[in-house]
Image (tube, rainbow, N blue to C red):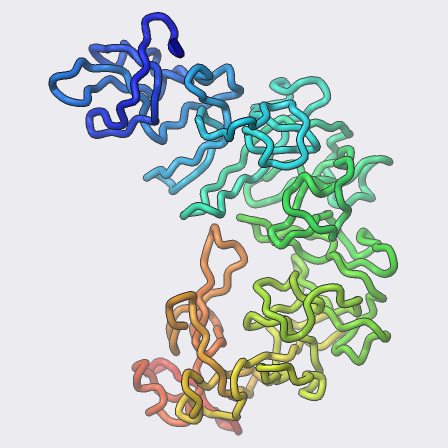
Amino acid sequence: SDCSPGLFCDGTRFVDGRFAEGAYCTAYCADRNDCGPADHPVSGCMACGQTNSKERRKCFPIKDCIRGCRGDDDCNVAIGERCSVKRVDSDYGGPYVAWGCTGKCLAGALPPGSQCTSDSECCSPFCVRGKCAGPCLGDEDCTLGSQCVARLYVDVGMPGCASSLLTMCAPGGGSAKTCGSDGECPAGEDCAFWSFAGDEVVFRCRSPNAGGASFGGECTEDMDCQSGLCAPEGFCVSPCRTDSDCAAPGGAGVCGVAVLPRTGGVAACNPAVGSGSVCGRDGDCPPGEVCGAFRRLDGPRRFACVVPEKKGPGAACESDHECGTGLCLREYCAPVCASDTDCSPTSGLVWTCGMNEADSEGGAARACIPVAGSGAACGGNGDCAAPGEVCKPILVSETLLVGRCGVASNNGDAPGASAGEACAGCADPCLCRTVRCEADLCLAGRCVELCKETADCEEAGMVCDLPAGPGPGVCANRGS
């Protein structure tokens, strides 16, 4: 009774060794042509086959075939299909997602155009500016008062991080003028996320999301922000060109960088409040402020005084944004420093003032480097007596390394990479993965370990390259 005249309900899971999705309405067939046009959004993913040689051949759906759709009308609603985001594990170009007919909508999920407060309420599953969004190719596919905009969908919960740029109808108005900051938009409009052009983020002027947070506000999804863009670290992104675009209540703003999935980042206002004075250590700042480090899209880090509203030195972290100083080093929030006296002891950690990876504009490019463990001075792994500790190098200057004994770092359940092995940092788990060195220092994509003699490097098949001046050497490839 659930199927149209001439069709019957079948629940066979496998036909001709291929998978068929759950129960479905079908008909008997002699070949593929009896199952409907190949270019039809519903029948285009049907095949003709049989479960065994004694059964008649019948039409069945092919698993993971994208039957493209621009609305529920393109799908077989009679069998529970809806037009939603569908993941495909393709052998060509890796996994991806696209608008397709799928039966994965949760019971009670709302159709496009319905009022919503979060993505989970919508079948699509996108809640954009208070309404469930549906697919589109252009503004002509959207109702009056809506625009066809793009959104990057990244399924980080699945192996391979399936992702695609999806276009959908979103309510809103505005001039749609291309912009780089709110100040470039007409009164009453914000410079908001519009789409992607390759790896570049496109911002256009439009009416702000009602009730959305301004830049730096906490968010879990794009809907939470006036700009329509929530960074993976959980703060609202607002584009900028200079610090003056980021005036913040109670202090100066900073034009920094927000790292977005599959992009090199975008120039965005940093959620920081404070005097904004140039600094090289906390002592350079007014009472109640610390010296914070801010990434910039096209230059070295900027060091400025800010009120520390996030994690303090020594707290565990995964990204710079979690830390009040804007620096997450070796998985701990770290303060900026000019000398070791700026690095206060923290329980379980030993700090040394060393070089950070970038210079600064008028400030010191140095930070307190943390080592978890005994912190005993060392010149090679053999100097570290505590179980599980290795000699961790710290770059004190461009020509001087010092060693501190600390617990060997790892990569999840796997040990950290050894001297000479490949290493990498990664801000986007969908594009790459972080490979840590057991001694925590990765230079030019290779792990660095300290040594006092070649015997310290023989296990890695390397030799000890000793400096002309004081300090330990580093394990290096033979003949390098």
